[in-house]
Amino acid sequence: MNNAQRATLRRGSSSGHAPLPELRRFQQRALVVGVVGLGVCVAGAFFSPAQFFRSYLLAYLFWLSVTLGCLAIVMVHYLSGGAWGIVIRRLLESGTRTLPLMALLFLPLAFGLHDLYLWARPAVVANDEVLQHKSLYLNVPFFLLRAVCYFAAWIGVAYFLNKWSLAQEQTFDPRLEQRLRQLSGPGLVLYGLAVTFAAIDWLMSLEPHWYSTIYGAMFMVGQGLAALAFAIAVVVLLADRQPLADVLSPAHFHDLGNLLLAFVMLWAYMAFAQYLLIWSGNLPEENVWYVHRLAGGWRGVGLGLILFHFALPFLLLLSRDLKRRARLLALVAIAVLCMRFVDIFWLIVPAFHPTGVWVHWMDVVAPIGLGGLWLATFVWQLRGRSLLPLYDPALQEAREHG
Image 1 (cartoon, rainbow, N blue to C red):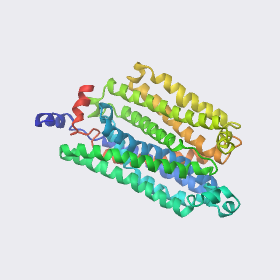
Image 2 (cartoon, rainbow, N blue to C red):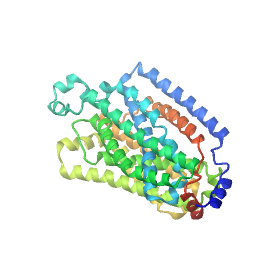
Image 3 (tube, rainbow, N blue to C red):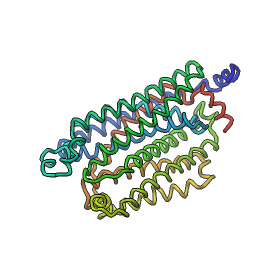
Image 4 (cartoon, rainbow, N blue to C red):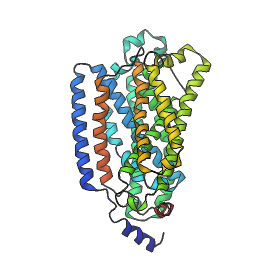
């Protein structure tokens, strides 16, 4: 990019920062909702501590999935390129900068391990040979140490990605683009390993006798789907703000819609592959997980996931016209994001209530409270930088693509 092109970008993007008054008001309201919601849940914890930790785990894993999905998609874009990533990169980067908050919010779970996990109860382990065999891995000190390692890896990768991206914004150094790409390859490997083990620790070990070799990959794809759906909804909301208004076009939304369709299909493939392998193996120690999720009303939740997490979004996203209409695409993305919450609910709650659907009021309030804090932090980070990477060489390609 020559000096004339850079000057053009600077003039065209002089109002590159997010609209401060509107976002500041939203940030304040989200913070109030978050504090009130979590305060109500803390009050509920005095009456039902076990339920508090279960609802908190549900809310935490949902918002963490959006956070980590943002980190993964940023690295995928640095490796693959394309105009689609330029228009949502700043949103994704803002999502990754909520990782310190998520690390802090993990602390309450450390006090609820006894209420959440059978392997954290010495009396249960003493009478269970399987848990005794797994105790070398499933024990409280090692569990917490692994959690520290996961967050250290995720925050470390996110830190350098954001640091070098900001440096690229301030000084047009072509070496930074290469540095970001070189970090993204190993970063994705590190992210994938950490997410796989975190899924085993925090989710799969809720039922410690059960195991699945595809579980971590399925959870990883779900994170990418949640983050992409969230980014689409936000970019549509900000589409009429500068400098996005000068760059965004139906072609960009079409690309994002295609990527959302790909993630929906990949999630469905992973979920079906796990079910098919366990069904064909027909082993009691594996079947029990699906027995819990197909009993009573849980069968209806599973069918709802098939219909509204896969079938309906799949059919809608096949439409070229829908993907090029921003508001309709945003509605589909919000629906997918809601179904991601239902999916995590289906993964967690049957471990505690295998005989039928159980919805506690904290299962609703905790995600709202945690979400308020997360959104307030996200908006705070979003306000601090431009809505587009102003000096990225690919920005001109994004303009021409539109």
